[in-house]
Image (cartoon, rainbow, N blue to C red; front, top):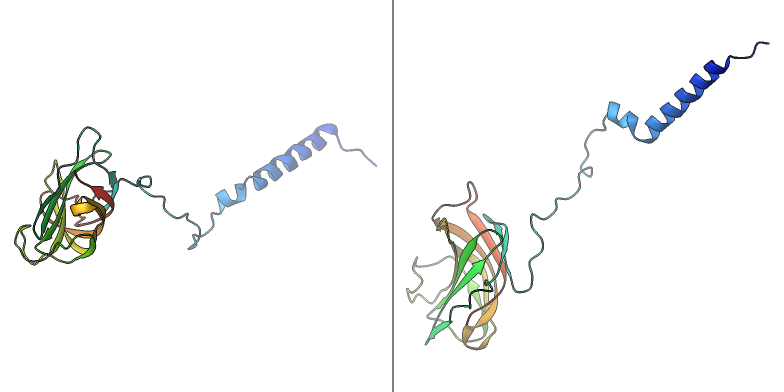
Length: 189
């Protein structure tokens, strides 16, 4: 019986090791990709990190976390009888905003107020409505609340939280996006 030549044996070992390595590292999957399944893609990651406890989270037309800039003191809360009018400057990662809070003729102190579509387009209409709005400073885009809650927890309406759905009413929106949601803690002077 004849012995195989050493170079034939060496070639066979190299081919077996190479083929094994290719199969182990997923080589066959590269030739014949598997068909996509419902579970094959990972869930999407958030577009920005979680907002801090003192920030307002904006999602929709803007995806941002915004808070009162350190260089600015909050504007004073204005409480006149049954009317509360707060304007709070906010600074996001790349944009500046103004958060407007208004309890128009129905302020009763610490309370959770329901947000509904505005019966009158003006803040000070004395229409007994609670209103929230956000204005993006550069574009002037203005968003009015349509649903959600405004909670007043501080003395004389000086702090609280908001969770609101808003719709665009003017200015330059993010193309194709006409809704905005905000949630978080707020305070004024």
